[in-house]
Length: 219
Image (tube, one colour):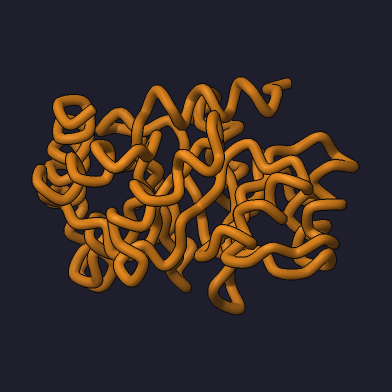
């Protein structure tokens, strides 16, 4: 059984957290396989469509049957019902775009890491009151790197991860790390529409290797 600290350490070591959703179970499985093949060991699947829960269950089967050292979390969790559904499905951690006391309570009850999304100092403070070990800066492309630089000294020791618009470019990623984040969330700039629609898994494999190399050199 992985602890919250184990999962956090895995995200910190990886330095990036790929996140995606697709309505097709087959595509979701193949994207996960490809990410894993490229060296990814922590993934966030997002609760952004009607098929999300069933697809997540399929990914859990894949994890158990083929990828035993994969850590699989669920994102876009906004209610206690959603949190409980995914806990029952075996989620290793929970991520929210908001601060939700009821989601935080579900995570605490099951001793799971919960990562809330924040965009103001007040929200960051509130997230800390709920025990957030890692805080998602969201939407990152709106807030920008200067936001992290300007507030990080207000919250010494707090770990931040930007999500939303992080570019697959050395200058962008290194800028985030220079601003003070511990990892970056990589969504549609890594797992692009073309990858999902046209099943460009070879391209995803190459881009993921590149992303991991950029992260390692940027830190």
